[in-house]
Length: 388
Image (tube, rainbow, N blue to C red; front, side):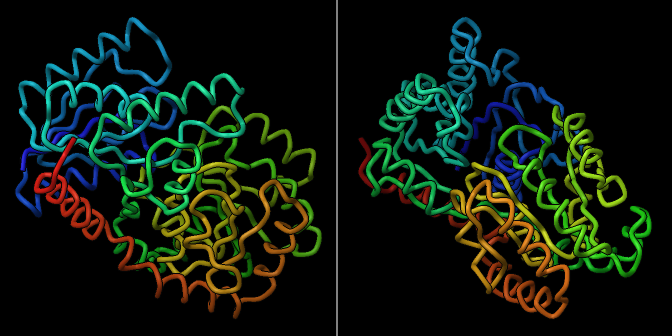
C-alpha cells in the first residue's frame, strides 16, 4: 500500500510515538510505501524524530502547520498538505491530532483518496475549556468525521465520548490500543539498581513515579498535595517526576511549602529511550491527569510489572482495574490518592501481585506490531468495502 500519515507536530508525546511506530512497522514489516507529513516540532517537549527515532520512510514538513488556530497559516497548510498528497498518490491517508486531522481529512477527501481515517488519541473538546471553544471544536470534529471513511479510538472510552457528543455514529469507530515497544519494559528491572543509585534513592526507598509534561490538567498539583500526607506516614517514600514544562517553577514552590524537598526528584525532559529504565526504578506509577485518551505511561508501567494508580478519566479504567492491576480513583481527589499511595508504599506483596497481573494481561495487547497489524487490517477493509 501507499500510506500517508498526517500529524500536527512530532514532539515527544503519546500520539506521536503511536504514529512513529505505525510508520516504522508499515515500512519495515509490511513493505508499504509510507509518507509522514508533519508541522515543525515546536514546544518544550523535544523533537521525536531528531532523537534517532526515525525510520525507513519519507518525511515532509509543512512549516505553516501549527497547533494554534490561525486562518492564514491554516489555509496555507491545507494547500501544502493537499499538494503533498497529490504528488504521493496514496491509497490510504491516516490522520492524527486535531489540526493535522482536520486539514488532512479535508485535503484527502478533496483528492478522493480511496481510504481516509483518523485516530482519536484524545478528544480536542473537554469540560475544562470555555463553552465557546468546546462547541467550536466539537463542530469541527463533526464536520471532519463526515469527511473520512473510518475513525480509530485508542480506547473504548474515546468512542463513547465521541458518540455521546454526536461526532459520528458508533459503527464508524474501531478501537485499536496505542502500541508501545514492550521489550524494554519487560527488561526494565535490569537497570533498577544503577538508575536508583544515580537518582539518589536508597534500597529501602519506595519510589512512586509520574510520567507527564509539567503542564495544565496533568494533575501534578494533586500528587504533591497527596504526597505531603503520605510522607508523614511513610518517611521512606520518594516521588519521581519524569518530564518538564511550564509548571516547573510553581511545582517547586508547592513542594517547598509542603516540606517535600527531600522526597521529590525531577528528571527534567528525557528521551523516550530512557523511560523504560526510569519505570524500572519505580515501585508504583501514579497518573493524575484530568483528561487523556489512554495514557501510555499506564500500560508501560503495568508491562514493567508496576502497579498503577490513576484518576478515572477516559480510557484509564480499561487497564487500571481496582485491586487487580492498581487503584482507580475519583478525579481531583486528594485523600483517596494519598490512601492508595500509602497502601502500596507499605505493602510490597500487594505491589508485586498487582504488577504481575498487569504484566500478564497487557503485554501482548500493547505490542506496537499488534497495533500496526490491526490498523493495516482496517486499511484493507476500507479499501475493499463500500465507501461514501
